[in-house]
Image (cartoon, rainbow, N blue to C red; front, side, top):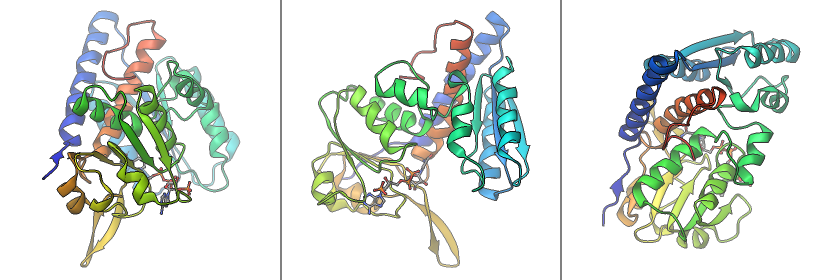
Length: 296
Ligand code: NDP
């Protein structure tokens, strides 16, 4: 059997198109332009590429993009002042602080200083609590993208066994909450899980968010299961490097019913969901209906 490839790149393009259509309507009907502000501290090349990409895609969706760059040595107070200014700015509907921050800065304090209504990353403690209690929240972009692809592939997820490998605050835990919200029977596995292979073998849905190249082999996968590979790992490839996921793609493809590739799976959905979250935040801020299908 060869798994259906879930094309995250094509799905993300559809999400971006949907966002752009709503943005055009918001402008025409209400004169409102959603705005996303990204804060970047320091000059980490990978973060700079991410931020540039986010800016480009924000503008392409017809939204305003604001970029705030601070020196790597900036103080916590300076960073918090930027957050406060953006919280108070009515043209800014979404605020994202590019992580990780330099070691001397307190990430948690910065995240929790962002107005929860503008917290398009969904990392603020209020949004974490709202998601955990099944209330309307800002949902973290990567798990939101995974859920959208799963819903699209399966229709209803109700009653399916889901195993999430990884328990980080940004992927594993919110992913598990979303699957629970869709009535899956959810197991969260991590580095201390016993007999991980057997745990994964029970799953109708496997979400791998570990950060270990090709850790999940095909013989851990139940025949016909859906495999969502969140991992992005750069590994040597001759003199160059290549990207691989947390799942061993070739062996899993032989067993799974459907699988996301790396690259071209979860990755493109993350930025698309950031745009979707910005639109959702803007709609809520203006008391307008939320666009359907772009949040949970
Ligand atoms: P973290 O390092 O924060 O978390 C990794 C999790 O994996 C931890 O819970 C850890 O367990 C668990 N883990 C580590 N080793 C094992 C093991 N041998 N067996 C079982 N579980 C293990 O990573 P993130 O959640 O931030 O990211 C995970 C991956 O997803 C990375 O490759 C990252 O690059 C990628 N990513 C991709 C995104 C995208 O847009 N596609 C966005 C965000 C992340 P424990 O808690 O016990 O240590």
